[in-house]
Image 1 (cartoon, rainbow, N blue to C red):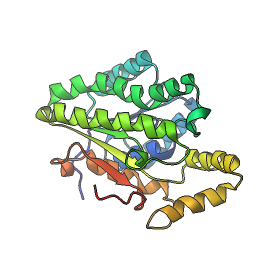
Image 2 (cartoon, rainbow, N blue to C red):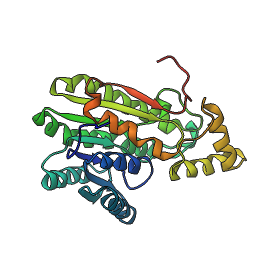
Image 3 (cartoon, rainbow, N blue to C red):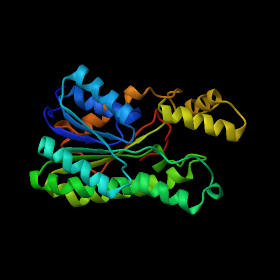
Image 4 (cartoon, rainbow, N blue to C red):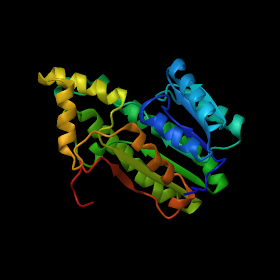
Length: 263
């Protein structure tokens, strides 16, 4: 299927590894030009080089701390100078640490808000005016299945990502008249480096092994497995495409059936 976004420009945040990298690769496969960012230069450059060599698309790479409003503004300014526009925004950031309520101090809560909520706010503030001018845009905010079904031991993520979902739904309402479509994507457990690390930390806290944690997660969804990261990117690419032109405001679960509610 031709998704109709060849030569569009996408800014994919936190895209040097994990699900962000998979999204960047899926968009590159459709011929989308990419502005990638991450905090670590080495992994960012490796990803950019991989995408250039495999897909032959233009790739801009910027080291950026998404919790810093000024760095985000510089990122978007550089993207506009290089490509002239931003058609697609995929807001992504690493998750906050695990733990129960009383295990987190106020600073931990503030860091979680900055990382998983304010980063999305900063990115949207910068790109929405560009999309409004063009009367075309796609915004996807990556959250977690925890916005549908809170996950044990992840109170920071459960709380802050829900706020991001509220942001996305409200933006969809406000920006539809400008043909800017906004979604959240809510992944379950994908076997990324972060999830492997999370399994190690939760296993230590619960006196078990990372392998047992992964088996527990797999048993909670109807497919009985933890997903491969490559299964994530195509969904986001579709939401960013012309083929999804009558969809906006959705919070789409990609979780192997972990969430068992009706809506």
